[in-house]
Image 1 (cartoon, rainbow, N blue to C red):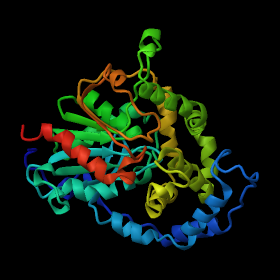
Image 2 (image 1 turned 90 degrees about the vertical axis):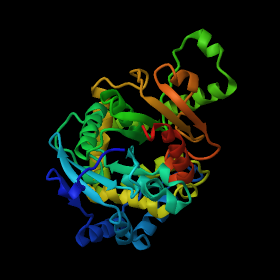
Image 3 (image 1 turned 120 degrees about the vertical axis):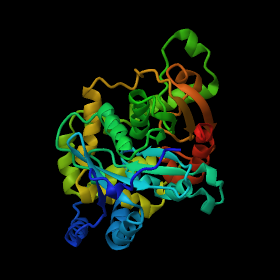
Image 4 (image 1 turned 30 degrees about the horizontal axis):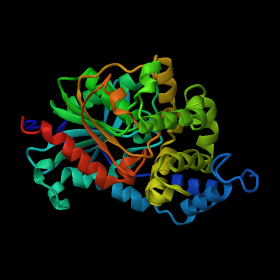
Length: 395
């Protein structure tokens, strides 16, 4: 389907990569966690003022004494990984080729506060469906990049890395890998970046699949009066998020550097900052581990800590705001688009509003799951990706 390509290691522009964190860095993490200076907390407030002290202390102690980074590092190193330099910055990515010759290339893009760790449970089913009880014809060649400034693609050294620039870098990455025709998938920033790839390279991106899609209302009274009860509920969910859940967005889009001193110096602070989002954005009731595996969550946090990229990852919000980006203004896209709607998404999309600026050809509604679909409901996500992209195969 894509024609023969050279193995990535044979490409002079692409370098094999293996995660190998120095033991001194792990010892330093343990030391810092052990010496954490904890804040006070009002009695009986639960999560109302933010992530509770007791929960963070317990999770930090597990991170320090029971969590095994080396085990998780080895698991990540089971996947072929590479780096390359694009637009002056180092870019890290997983590249897992399927053994199926007609596999469709697919780039899967994470968001914040995520990483390539989001996708570890879907890589096998997507690249080797036959081994997971599915049809071999549903196979993908999978490319999973770390966004510039995130994890092993960071920290970035220059300003200006907004959504458009990241998307252009990923289009170039797919070109370097020899893929002329491919799909794109993402949630959170990954959805925006993948969508932008379609706008930049519509002749190459055959289809776009997202788990988060903005569908702002126009404010027209006639349109608002015509909304169903479920559509109103979705708009209200978005309004609640903007009112009560977007404090992180405000500071990361205005003062990421100031925030970074605390989060770069304190692993407990970083843990609280990220784990809170997994509680608020997943399909859970009491703690995020009801929705995502605790070790997978901590591997995600560990990558931010060990690479020192909480600052450069937050800068994406700053650059987006300064580049004229807006959640209320969306450039129309003609790329065939599939949407997977999980009920605990930050702001579940409304199809008829989304269709004003997107060429939607596939729409799935699920009864469970939230913002981190690949971590929470990998089987549902994999099945939906297979269904959506079947229409683009054998062409």
